[in-house]
Length: 154
Image (cartoon, rainbow, N blue to C red):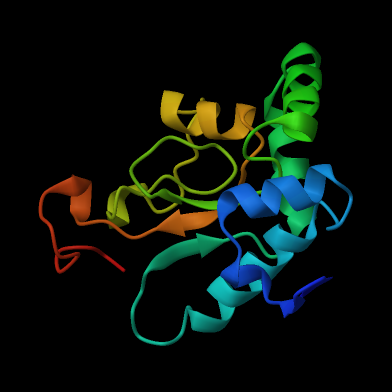
């Protein structure tokens, strides 16, 4: 919840631009949007939608897992970018078929249930470099062969 001139606003009501502006202006803690989004995703995970296949439990999970996978130069460049990037602290969800090494890349298949990608997809890397934080993975049809997620293991 963000208090401002116009009253109180829930984080979920803010646009990505508003979130990053508030973080850069120190009106919002950098981990607050991530924590709020992760909590909401976890709460709704059991609602029968199966929209998320994996969710980071807390904001530290993404940062800790990422830091073990990236070299020091890339981490420092990304950290500098995050502080002032256009998506500073904006929580995002990444499709289960895009390579992202901090959570399993299942592509909606039981065969890949424990697979961790050895690298990031370009789209994911660009989101992270712009300052976004990955909250979790979204469901897809097995190997993206469909449009309804009816053939997903999840």
